[in-house]
Figure 1 (cartoon, helix red, strand yellow):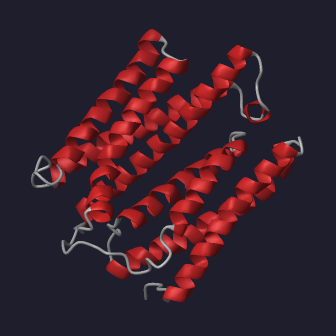
Figure 2 (cartoon, rainbow, N blue to C red):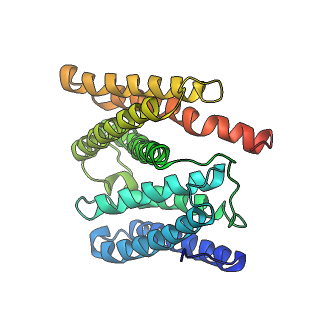
Length: 276
């Protein structure tokens, strides 16, 4: 039988999840302020992160079980995206020294979770999505999440490079992995994200009756534009050696287009115009 929570339990778990995320970020912040080595505390940080992600997963599963499909409202989708982002970050942190990034990633995850307080029964459309379409949606969400991670990382690469050029790196930047490693990780994430975005677009063309239908045409066009931007960036990296601020700007451009495709219309319809 699907696991369902009462409204009060759902809200309580939501608050606990947010606290766990903030605790993980807080541990990193305290280590930075005390000028201690983050690696000594990495197990505690990762334990808090794993607990938060586990609770977050339960909340997302509850929303799925309510409707037997992926929740389609703005805040539920935002929560799902940041769950995937958090899981990707945790998986990376087990193999790479990127715990410092938790100070940015986890507060956003906490906010995404808290925005779902009182949303234990998310609104959905009247359309039943078959399994093929849900595969398309999942691929879209995972690709967007990966490319969101790339956008976060591009911010750090930009700040890190500028401060290193000024020869006055701040304490936070000094705790990040080397610029070379940060750039390597950025392009790895971009490569996997682009591959998944390619699959998401391909399944959309296959499984949707008309991917250029009026109500989703803008999503299709913006997603294709994002694909072209990211593909050009990876080509420039391998063929022309693009890096640094040029790579950062191209990442920003592709992500902005993708963000508009995924959340732009949903935000306007649901939160501005109050339409489902």
